[in-house]
Amino acid sequence: MRPNYAVGVDVGGTRTAVGLVERKGRIVKDVMCLTPKAGPFAVVDAIIDLIEEVTQGITPSEIAGVGIGLPAQVDFHKQSIEFCTNLPLAGVDVRALVMSRNKYEITIDNDGNLAAFGEARYGAAKGARHFLMVTLGTGVGGGIFINGEPYRGSRGVGAEVGHVVVDVDGPPCPCGGTGHLESFLGRPAIAAAGTEAAKGFMGHAILAAAGGDASAIKAESVITAANGGDEAATKILVECGEVLGRGLVGFVNVLNPQLVVVGGGVGESAPMLVERATAVMQGEALAGRKDVRVVQAVLGNDAGLLGAAALAFDEHDSREGLHR
Image (cartoon, rainbow, N blue to C red; front, side, top):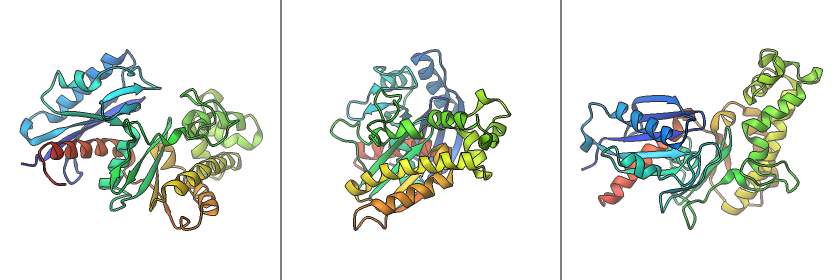
């Protein structure tokens, strides 16, 4: 028997969203809350409370399971959290803690992998068997699909696309490395560039987008100003696009994907960044790879939630010996 529903959980550094999802990808009910900052058990409690809220009134046998996306390096095979930059979850057995207080099978995964899962099953990468997704948000993440399946690596922690080195002399990355994609393209890096630009007359629109308060400048301030035609803000995003493009050259040369999907809050709201990255990638990729398409994601904030639900469906069907 194929259950009609699965629960998708998308835990972020700022918010946690949980949805009850049908097999065809329709979100029947969704709820969210601010991600607790009081410690790991508060995060687990919030996940459990939201799962209970969206499943209220549904017979347990109708639910395939729960997929949980975490902003962390997850050993998928062991279902353990190896490292987590923005939340105190490293070493915490989130799966066991959540399972101990509800009746569903739980599977955890990296949030970037699940955003790619969502776009593969229901969004911009539907039908693509070989593709790369890059998510640009607070950090830089993503996922890789090969032959229609997520690539996880030998321990399940593969596809950390935000942590490839694009400049050996580049700025420090929150993970502790240097010159990674995230060093240049995460929200904090874009906000810092915007703050510097706003000190001069050419960046007045960035300052205006932050309400005239330089301390309130965020990546969104830069994007708003750039989309309004501000020269300084445009320059920042074009330079970000060049960095992303150099990273994509390496991925495309190695993986030879059909498609690159750019998502996340920054990736989906800054078309000039994506356009510049595409031009750089197409200009430098090796022969036979220049026709790869680069597209923006279409699922928005729902990508991780839908991907988590799709994972739960697949894990259930695999346990039951059912074909997708």
